[in-house]
Amino acid sequence: MKYPLLLVHGLFGSLSAPGILAPFANKSVFTPDLIGYGQYREQYAREWTLNDQADHLESWIRMRADGPVHLAGHSVGGAVAVLMAKHYPERILSLTLIEGNLTLRDAFWSQKIASQSLDEIQTEVDGFREDVTAWIARAGVKPTRFAIETATDWLDNQPVATLRAQARAVVSATRDESYLEGLRSIVSSGLPVHLLAGAHSRNEWNIPGWLEENATTNQVIPQAGHLMMIEQPEIFARTVTDNLTG
Image (tube, rainbow, N blue to C red; front, side, top):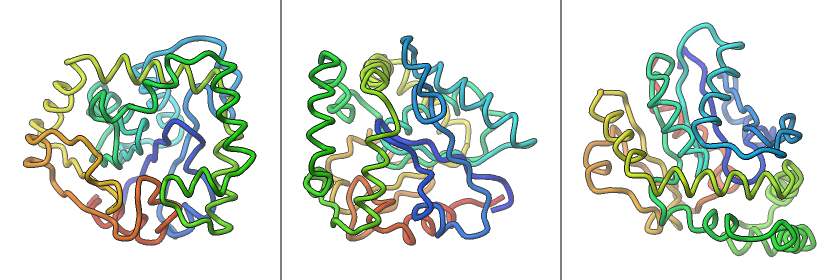
């Protein structure tokens, strides 16, 4: 892998935990916060679109990498990655969708949060915080110390206003027919597109037939679900990077 890998996080948290990044060893991996998250959490006060998030990523990486990058997005981050690849094809060498939101059906959690009040979201997040072990267990994650610490950090990486704004942006993007048409044009362009899922959650991922047929690779990580990067971090890192040539 000659060029950097840009990892885009999902609705909660980031992908910058040392336990996630360590298995990538000496490879160049960037894990920026999206608008409203982490170092940009103060920007939650305004609404944004996923196109705004894609523009934010392109600006962020342009300041740190001279050439193109491999792009990988997890869950909600997958939707952002699709739009970045669509709008900035010259910057992207490959696109990896890690159970990325491809349709409104994939964005079921975002649909729920998008319609809630901030108080309702805060109550739910507080409940997760009170018992992080139970929260990740519902996603099928074995409550190792690493998984619990990482999930706790995820809960603290953004205010609830960010969660609602991002959820609304995801719902708006994935319900628009132009979103999948954009992904279809990416595939047709010849850009390598890799699909990656956890064995426990693969059947819940709503992949259009034409994408499944034309993807460069379509892989499943064993003994893992949607949060595969904290369940099987070594296999996750190896699978992502083994696909990347150049």
